[in-house]
Image (tube, rainbow, N blue to C red; front, top):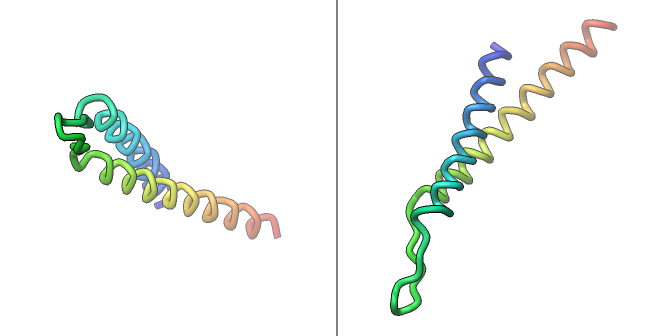
Length: 72
């Protein structure tokens, strides 16, 4: 199970980075009236990054917990 958490966290972090890159490269512009137009890639990217980081921290906590109590 812990490998699934690790793989999921890495995939979410990569997906978040890709979404933020796409948002900053293609979908963000100002029109003639000065309004900023954005797509949903930025919120999806930030959400994916946050969830991926939380899963990675959870994976590290589980791994260190098992390593600590295995030695005791």
